[in-house]
Structures are given as structure tokens and as C-alpha cells.
Image (cartoon, rainbow over all chains, first blue to last red; front, side):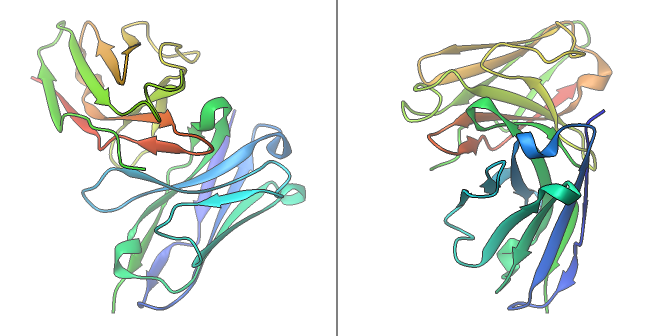
Amino acid sequence: QVQLVESGGGLVKPGGSLRLSCAASGFSFSDYYMSWVRQAPGMGLEWVSYISNSGSYTNYADSVKGRFTISRDNAKNSLYLQMNSLRAEDTAVYYCARRIVGATPDFWGQGTLVTVSS
Amino acid sequence: QSALTQPPSASGSPGQSVTISCTGTSSDVGGYNYVSWYQHHPGKAPKLMIYEVSKRPSGVPDRFSGSKSGNTASLTVSGLQAEDEADYYCNSYAGSNSVFGGGTKLTVL
């Protein structure tokens, strides 16, 4: 069955960097667009970024543009999110999700917590 | 884009039906038939319950149904059960990416 497992979260100081990973299994990873979605404490879900199946096309929410970089390694069935210049407002649980038609996330991981605090 | 508008809370007794609304604009909900709904229990992965407005993924009970009229989509949960208590989020295609609603906490009384 489809499995997505995020890792790499943790506590980081404002201005710091963190790289999240998402290991995918149970489906043909290279056939699907993938997304990162986050949920800040007490808040709703917020789309962060997505990447095309080949990795050639990416898109970002305005709130992270220029600071975050999404990438993938289809040979390793892995998705990544490089987060630089982190701010307190980036504190959230970050989910990776498979994307189907209509930009719909269908399967999600359980998330990894990123805390930005001094 | 702005988040879609959902009521913060909804409730019903076991066996009853409850409907959660999701209001957007002609640039998202009203413009495309790509509205999806997610059930989220804290600490777990969000689960897709409805996609393309009214389609149910395999394994989702038919107690869950979706519809859309104009710029507003709706999720109806019939025959409420205790395990339906969760947060529910809508999502809509908005041209190259998607936008989420703010979430509705469903309480089973």
C-alpha cells in the first residue's frame, strides 16, 4: 500500500536551515507530482510547494518563495524540502503528499514537526 | 489565494446527519470540479474522503457524500458515528495549485 514517511524535523533557531525528507513506497513514485503541506499550531492546512513527476517544474506559496526549495530523487523514491532563512511563523507540522489530477493530495504522510525558536 | 471559508465547528448526535460547507470564489471552488475533503485526526495523516466534488475513494463509507453549488461545496456525513469526530478540511484546485479551507471540527455529541 501507499506509504509516505517524513523525517528531518526538529528545533532550529530563526535564520537557520533544515532539510526535510519523505520516503515513498507502494506506488510508482516517478509517475506522480508531489507536494508539501504544513499545519501551524492551532491553524489549518497550508499548501507549501509542489514538484512535477520529473522534477523539472516546481511551484511555491508566496510565504516560502525564495527561502524553500523542493526537489526529488526518483531513483531513491524520495522527496525533499530544503528550508533556509527559517522564521518563527514556519513552525508547523510538515506533511508530504502525493498529488493527483486537479492538484488533489490523495495520500499523506504522518508529518514531521519543525519548530523555529531561539 | 485566500483560504476557503469553512465553519469552525459542527456537531450532531449519533445517527444524525451533518453538513459542512466550504465557500470559495469563481477562481477556485466555482471554477473547477476539483473539490476534495479530508478527515484529520490529530497526530495522524489526513485522509482523503471525497475528491472531484463527489467521488469517494475505495474504502470510504458511503455515509460520506459531497456536492457543489456555485462557489460553495458541501460535505455531508450521514448516520454519524463516534469515530467520525475529527477535523475536516476542504481543498480546491485554483489554477496550477490548490487552496485549503480553514477546517471544521466535527463533534459527535
